[in-house]
Length: 355
Image 1: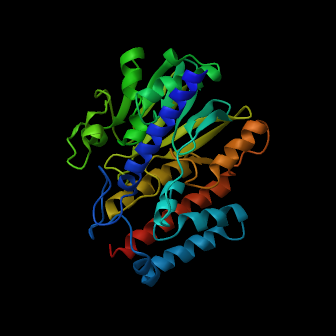
Image 2: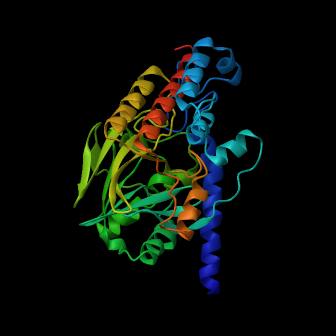
């Protein structure tokens, strides 16, 4: 028991160190782009607070988004979270922006979010496990190879799944906290790894800003190359993928067919969040959102819980009462309006930067 405790502490400590290293690199603001990210013409990923507040065109988009939310309390909260100079932010980044040190990540109990979707990993970053008729399709793979054996495999076994059945891992974007354990699954189980061409290039390209330790970390070998509009199919499940550059040059958006209390439901996952530093990335983001609206999507995810609301709280509620209210679910009309809110808020930041 003591040895397992020591190993657990080591994993958490390493994850905390990785978090401290990666948080700034992943925000994509300031004078340089995020690692592998993109920036606006002004050299930043976001407008300043002053630029945002003083831009009449930006504030017109904000007002339009607020009008779309109307009096719906759920949509008002989404508008408050989504519109702003920085847009929705991870809790760790919000703490950093406030001059605070982010709390160390904590391993969470696996949670079943939908009939065929589980979340495993940390309270800051996770892997999304989709059960299909022919095995497991997993989205993202935590931070490191060590976390494959210390977190992912034990979590899968805890929910009654065989790690050897992970047939595909689709990586949302090319940062270590999304593909870290992928090399382990690729080598041990011959799991297929899918990523956009742009982000395969990103993880293979030497990065002069990396530390020696980061440069030495294992990367998956190039496998499936995702193009905009491609599908990854396993058994009875096909997810549709769109390339949405912004957070990185090849961040992905997913349309995921799920089941909620026995009924089909479509979820949208935005691996690049709402980061659109220029007109080209805004156009790609809008296209992915329009596809989600056309598909009648009713739920939204990101790799980092807490980005789009109190998602850790929603997960905890589902652990306690799996058949109770699922706060991830919107009505189709609500989610259609939420998509329009996201579009207006993203446009507000781009125009505030003078584009």
